Length: 476
Ligand SMILES: [Zn+2]
Image (cartoon, rainbow, N blue to C red; front, side, top):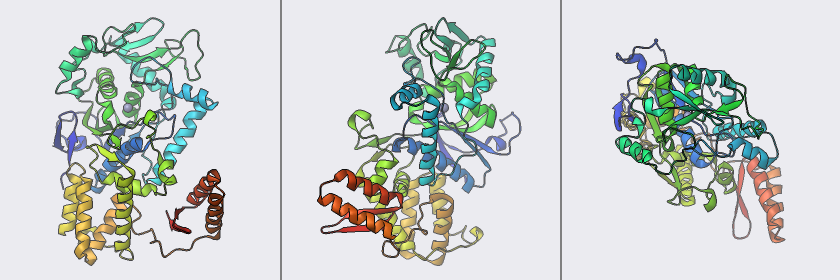
């Protein structure tokens, strides 16, 4: 079946033809579909919004694999100091958090990379083929800046850094179309931009010099003296190293459409002399919370620990992600997550003992299989896919179960068969002891201890729910 995917470059759903099958592609021969996903800096617990991006990368990869492609998927780990916003000035995220936590910037990066990867595991997202760290690719980043310098695309702002001159870049900001020319004109008219020594508002730092009076932990030597990379350059350098100068898919959150990705395109196309740099630009939309933006000030930046503390499994969140198409906004509320959990549990109950393995060839012509593939190939329309599964279960046959088994193993990964329904499991004595102690703790109003005991139960993959007189224990 033919995959159609929404391409931000053309603002339309397009037939997916990988470079290896594209007669217009003139680069070196490829035997894989290359995809690169941008991941934010590892300096804090990833939020459920961040994980929506990781989930989308997984969705793209799994879709391509279902269609039989050999996929080379790369996701970067930004473990080098960058600045707190898209602007080129401000405090460095890693250094700021290092100060706050009283550890080194390197330790901050290692700690949060580990947390990120553990979260992926809980969400049943396999690691990507390559997860390169920016700190291990400093040479490649320096080499690209050097090339851009040799081609006269850069200028130096004294005491500050090396900047990309975007006025020399043909079609700079094209990704922001249809209004990009107007947007650029607005920017040039001075819309909220800190110019510093920049020549044009859209120019951006490729390399920052180390400040004279301040010692940063993550500085490196370079042909230009001590300093650190600008925040866009690592994605160009690392994606090229692993996928070559032109590749199939570059994915990231929709927040990258206006700054990070236009800059990534500019420096790559100018540095490597290619156009287009990437054939399909895919962006997942934001996750909202209670109909608004997630923000620290509102206290609604939830992470996986918050989800688990409320008695949900990360797989309920995985089901929740499937409920919206990646390219649309998705609104997170606790009620919605509860609905996701209930639906997932009802599916588990309907499917229990029905795991049926058949050769894919035996059901490829079945209308359910066709519907499922049509939904996936329609820009990964996961709500349509879930609806097809639910509908099919009304009059399920042996083949229905075989198809759902195949879908679960290769795509959904929601533990629809492995999870045992509530009434059929043994509760370890340890869990019961914790739950009993928790009842006592609550009676004596020691809520901190009660919370701690709840976490201990969660760590053992169980959850405790209060009832009128006692409690109920269920498996996560
Ligand atoms: Zn990036």
